[in-house]
Image 1 (cartoon, helix red, strand yellow):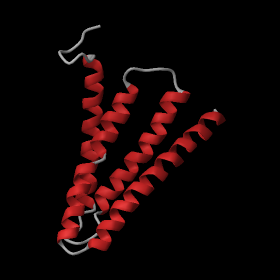
Image 2 (image 1 turned 90 degrees about the horizontal axis):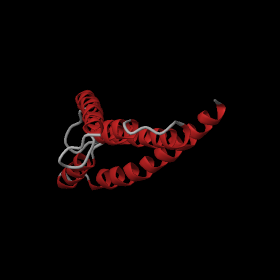
Image 3 (image 1 turned 60 degrees about the vertical axis):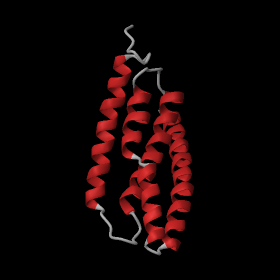
Length: 136
């Protein structure tokens, strides 16, 4: 097996790269579709982060517990697609802007709901993957 200078299999890096491209394009498209104004709830980032949490919970459970081992599925879906789709840094910038705009109740609600609902989405997705997997 060939290794890059960083000790990774180039095929694994390609899986992360391909998945990241898909996730980033999806995020950019949703960002354009759900654009919001100053002091408003940042729906695009909120939505992509919850979707990424759900997909990561579902895929992680499915790939770790229900499917045969693969070197490329988890990097493609987890690191690539979900990493390209979700965006913690944009959430932080949006929170700072909300505070600067005086919309601190929205900022606090946005942070709390993003964290809580992200965890709920992951847990629900994991439970769903186990339930669906046992039905096969």
